[in-house]
Image 1 (cartoon, rainbow, N blue to C red):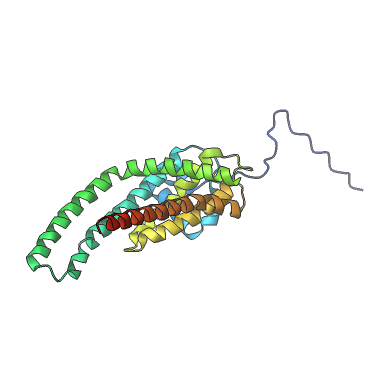
Image 2 (cartoon, rainbow, N blue to C red):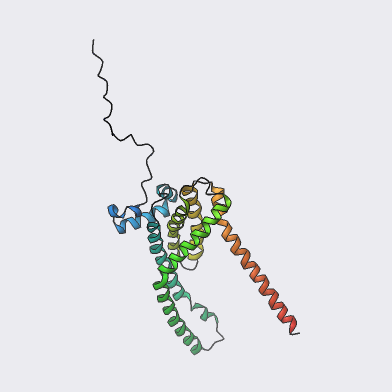
Length: 244
């Protein structure tokens, strides 16, 4: 009869325990030293565009603010560049719909518009990173408060950094500014979808709470705009009535 195999010896003291559930591998953007700067940027954009659910599943809940901040600055600058170019190209097209103006007046207005547009474009491109940084912190703070209001942070361990990372990586939507005319609208809708998906994953909350937190600033802005229009209309009507 064959003898039984010897017992497996226990691991030596200090031997690391077997790993449990693996941590997220991270987005390519956060592995730039191994992947390379350009490849990491392109791969992260591709992942967020073609498979956002996978992208958010690979996004770390914590790390640092610098990674999403730099990513947002880069894609935001590209979006501003496209938006400025389209504004420069299409900005003077409305002059063609004013046939009552003499041709020389239209030509002079077009030249002035081109000069002003070039100056505005250069100004926007130079200050775009500053605008992106300020907007990123402000929008993250507002969104984080809204998530607190609707209870979307009850199961979160990421805190404000998690919201900041969601807003930062959702800035990839600004690349939709490359679409003429409707790029701004597409970027806004795309951003809302990405933020909802990202908040649901990073803050471990429900889709309903994530949507509610995202909609609060939109509802407040629309309400303020409607009130401003009503007050302005009332003031105009009062002024007209006073001159009768």
